[in-house]
Length: 225
Image (cartoon, rainbow, N blue to C red):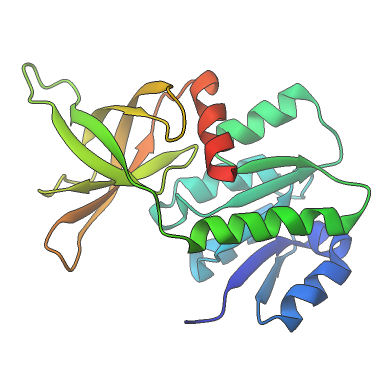
């Protein structure tokens, strides 16, 4: 297994100086970004397992950087923590809409964030829970609804496991129940990537287009649980 890479914004890295040293001593590779735009560049080039950035970053702030990362199919499901000095409802909503996994107010003690780091990494390392999804091609009159399986659920999309190739760019209507809840989500989505796996089936990364905040928050809570 290769080294686990974590990308941390420069302001965040200074705040977590002792914690960063703790992680490095345990074999994690720490990457730092001087501003939001640089964080996006590094994330696209290195595909870290976890990203921690400040909302208040120069050039491109944390929310805009997160949104840019989520538009990259390879970063669609990467855990992203955005930390802010304040807790305004507007900032929290903007970050969650951008697709962050967790919005956190900077704690009094930097060590408190280690729990979130450990939790995010364990979520990525454990076997991904699968769930049933009903989907069809959006706008296709009389189109057949297909019941399939999906995993890697996030606030911005999911990984659909399909028996046939669904071309990149295809618009889908999805319906699924958030695991461990009884909440049904109906959302439009677009295929961002598709590849065939060793079993001969297809892994299709889809991005939610019109997910309502009232549906997004339970998904974020589930992913972080």
